[in-house]
Structures are given as C-alpha cells and as structure tokens.
Image (cartoon, rainbow, N blue to C red; front, side):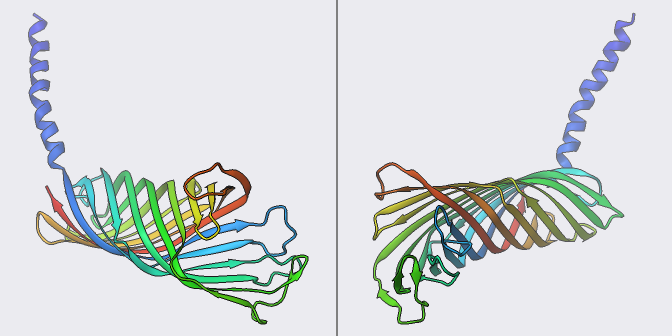
Length: 325
C-alpha cells in the first residue's frame, strides 16, 4: 500500500517540474544587441636596454595611434527580465570589428646614448589600422537592494587583436660623436623623408579579470551603472616587421596590470527594446617578457634578443540597441 502514496508524490513532482522550469525561463530573456562605437587611444611597443651601457630606462618606444577607430559589432546577452526584483545570473558575449583606415600616426623614439638620457632618434609616419577585433565574455550574479540599487559581481575574459602598418613620414637622427656619444637631436640632426610602406605591427592580448558594478534604477525603466575591472592576469604576444631593414621582432609578454572603469546608461523603450550608451577606459601597463629577432620578413628562425614590453590605453564609447527574443 505504500506504493500508492509514493507514486502520487512522484506524479506531483514530475508534473510540477515543467511548471517550475517554465517559470525560470520566463524570468530570463535572451537578447541580441547590434552596437556601434569608436576606440580612441594608443598601443605601446617597448624595447628595454639589454647588455648595453645606455643611460635611459628605455631603448625604444613606439606609439601606434587609434585616433579614432570606428567599429561595429553585436552583444548576445542572457539576463533576468526584472533584475530589480530578485537576484539572478547573467552572461554576455560581445564582439567588436574595427573599420580599417587611417587612425593617426606611429611615432618611434630611441635612446642610445651612454652618457645621458637624451633622445637620439625620432620618426613619425602615417598609421593605418588594418584590423581591430575585440571579444569579451562575462558572467556573474546580480543582487537588487531596496528596489533601486543593483550590485553585480562578475568575471570577464577578453581577447584583443590589433594590426597596423606605418607608411610615409620622416625621421631625425642625432649625429654620432663616437663610442655611444651623440650630439643633441636638435643640433643639426640627420634628417630623412620616407614614402611607401615601412613597418607592420601586430599585437594580441588575452586577460582574465574579476569585476564589480553598482547601478541605480527606477522601476525597470532605466538603469545607470558604474563598473570597475582589475587584474594582473595578462598575456600579450606581438610581431614587428621592419620592411626597410628586413628584420622581424617577436615578443612574448605577461603580467603587469589591467584596469577598466566604465559607465553605462540603459533605458527600456518598451517590453522588447532597450537602448544603452557605454563609456569605458581600458588600460594595460607593465607587461614584459623576452624578445626574439629574425633576419627575414616571412621566413627564418628567431633568436632571443633582450626584453620587451607592451601597453595599451584606450577609450571606448558605444551605442547599443537590445532586442529581447
């Protein structure tokens, strides 16, 4: 006789499960968001002194402009329908594709003197951004407070790929006085004009970072959020090809610090549409590692040759339209 009540309990649980599952599904929405924006900043390529008597902290510094780079992309979002009502899980995948074109200049500075820290070489060329791709995945938990505040904790994984080339421009070289001694660069320097393609540069980033955000909203109508991400878990790979000298440099770097403060304002237009504006600043600095050089563009082996570094400072502004499916 005990089989009957046990069977009844099983039937109740079995019949109730789809109802609970359906309720959970209704509490969440999947959204697809086209987005448009621009990147404004610089990518840094650094060479540190190695086995030399130079006095400056750096041997070479190249700054690649992104001023600006326009992009398009999309965001896939899974989040609570009413985040201000109760806690919930969320995740998002964002992809941004930069539009190729002129994006400022690339400036190269060298410090080769063994007696002082004065600049010895300077060159400036037109910078063309060939490719810029940014992928961000985040997932976390949101907690509402007092029906007005929304706190989120999350982790973010980001991958970035930038490709540039420099062309045309000019250079100024301080006169060599012998034995690593140079005249001031503004004292009758050796000057040279260039035309055509001169240098290619590729930089790839990967990092893992925790983050937190705090938002203020009103009855699911709008939400204003500030966020902050920080992490030392940074990896960077780059490849520099000097066409005139037929030389390549490849660097494997890690560490340093990555941080990104941001602000977002979003507003629900109706049940299905949401529009948002994002502003953030992404900074990476202190990333270092071994540098390798090769003698031919496209072929040949690399050998270790000193230490290199990389950095990035970039303002991102974006406009997104969220369509709930």
